[in-house]
View 1: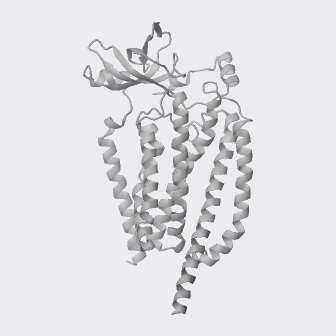
View 2 (view 1 turned 90 degrees about the horizontal axis):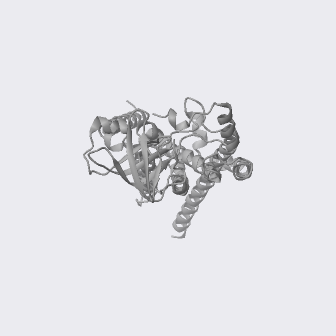
View 3 (view 1 turned 180 degrees about the vertical axis):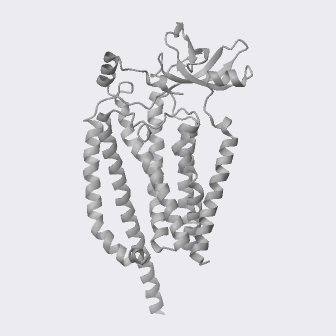
Length: 148
Length: 244
């Protein structure tokens, strides 16, 4: 084998092995790499009460209730729901139908108390006129609803 | 191969790059003027984000360029290691700080966008963390290529790092699909077509081409400067030898 070909084989083999090792590691740590759990994940995996974790999903339409400085709402992934309460400053994008990621603890009754609430932005970018036109013509589907 | 080796000759490269540079620089300048005009004035605000959407026209092109530059580093590293092409390590050395700059811009503009939109400057989700690792890989490449007295050894070590770090490139791209993240999924390169309204695509693509042109302008200038400084070095050594 010419030295050039030997070096090519080393580099190609090394990169292939490294890629395979990385793929295995990432698959093994799948659970630790997700940023938040969805309400369905909570049903499947039983998070112990009092442990801090992140819950993500959509703010259910019509679920927001304000009680002084505290706000109550329901996080849904369109299959399961979790009631959430939070006291503090909300991001500008927070509204019904919007994606949110909240961090906090869940109690035995399945009620989530959030310490922080972050808004999630979807991948859609539209001028206001186009968004209004879509709503008027009835072609509007809230973008987040299509997700997951 | 014989054809490619013509460009491997540094004198040939100096001639070719001197002819190309004004054109590349001029086209880049025109693209920046057009791109910035469309991005800042001639495109509509977003229905949710308002004018904050304009950060995207800098953020997304620099994100693309940060991945492009790293791929360039890895390919140049492989070409240098396997075929010993004399310009390969030199172009990797020239490209690394430019890529680090693009990565810094993407992290900084993302942070500025994240505060008003998400409500936080930074989170440790898979996308943001993998891009931060990319930034550190660039810094490691810059440091490693200058860490040895013998520049050839530094270039080889940096090339190995570039190849090892290349596994991070697909991780960054697909992080938003493989795991749930706070960062939104891809808007442009997706099977269903762009999720960005057509009125917002011209500034985005103009800025992307401007960033690409900016990369090649800087790359040519940096390689030319590197070649010139090596020539000065060689002349100094020759002058010292002659004086003895």
